[in-house]
Structure formats: structure tokens, C-alpha cells
Image (cartoon, rainbow, N blue to C red; front, side):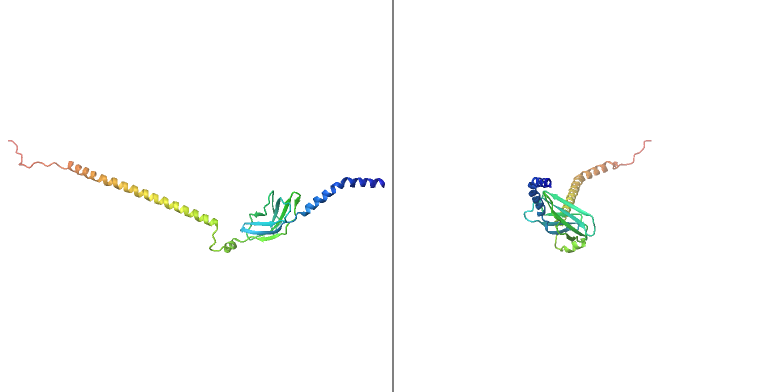
Length: 210
């Protein structure tokens, strides 16, 4: 019995220096809080932005996001480390579909508990078009309009240049024809005089000698 007590004492004496470190490690794991104020902002029918906050002082080095369709077991897992960002893009979403999103913080010691689940539904294409006011113009539409106008201007300039070339060529040919017209008239008159029958002098009839 005495030997057993001595053995227990030696064991406690040996592991005593490591007890505070274990307690400190456990406390550091418990101190990493779940992300707060998780919100979803739909961008298009097939994409959205998730944002969140963390408690000040949490040793966060990254985040992990789980994305799941409602009533479907399949998950999408997004993880990024060595970053201080507090937002992430969700892509390839189906329109008019409900999704559930959780966010976790990542530290050197591990991950935090899951945040409160956030449920959101992607809009329909018709809802997106209806929500846009008639006077609202996106940058994409402005760029497309500018490209169309530039293309139209290029076509107009090319057509005008072609017409100017045709008109200049016609005027040049007309001047050449006009300059050659007097020479053609002289050649015609000369050819007509050469081809005409020569005139015989008038006189009496030739009599034959007997």
C-alpha cells in the first residue's frame, strides 16, 4: 500500500508541470467563439455574398463555410486560411431555391463552433427583372450599348469611304471619256472621208476611134 502511494506521488510530481499547459490549451480552444451576424446578400439569380463578424481578440486565421440546399443532404464546403476577410462569394446557385449556410472561424488550434444557421432563397429571374426599375441601367448594359454604338459608327464610316471612292472613280472615268471624245470625232471624220467614192470630172462621152 505504501509502495502504491509512493508511485502515485511520483506520477503526480512528474505530470504536474504539464497540467497548466493542458488547461491553457483547453481554454484556448473554448475561447474561439462562433461567428456572429451572419447575413446573406443575393447578387444575381445564381450567386450571393455571405458576411459575418467575429469577437474582437479571437485569434482567427481563416474561415470555413458549409452550404446546403434545404431538405438535401449534399453539402458544399468552402475553406480559406491566412486571410482576414469577413465575406465570401457563393456561386452556381439555383434560382428559386432555399439554402442553409453555416460559418466557422479557424485558428491555429482548430475551428470554432458553427454559427447560427442562415436560411435564404435565391430569387427567380422574373423577380429580379421586376425588382429593377425601368430607369436603372447597369454597367454591363452601358458597356454593351457603347460597343453597339462603336460598331455602328465603324460601319457608317466604312460605307461613306466606299461611296466616296466610287464617286471619285466615276468622276475620273468621266473626265477621261470627255477628254477622248474630240479625238474620237476626228478619227471618225477621217475614216469617213477615206472610205467615200472619188468624184470624176464632168465631160462628154468618149468616142471610139473608127
